[in-house]
Length: 81
Image (cartoon, rainbow, N blue to C red):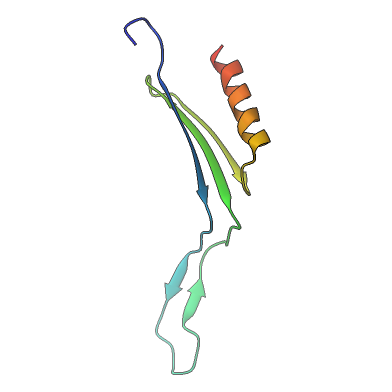
C-alpha cells in the first residue's frame, strides 16, 4: 500500500431464503402466522471492498455459477484498469 497499490477483499455469499414472519394473537384453532415478506429461492452476492473503501457489488436472484463469478471478476478488472 505504501507503493500506491490497493488491497482487494473479494467474497461470495449466498442467502438461501428470506421470509418476514410475524405472529399475532388469534382464536384457538386459527392460524396466527402472517407472512410479511417475499420468499427467495436464493440470492447470490459478489462483493469486493478495496483498501480505499471502494465497494463493488453484484447480486443475482439465484445461485452463482463459475461463469457468473468469472464475468464479475472480468468486469471488476476492466473497471480497475
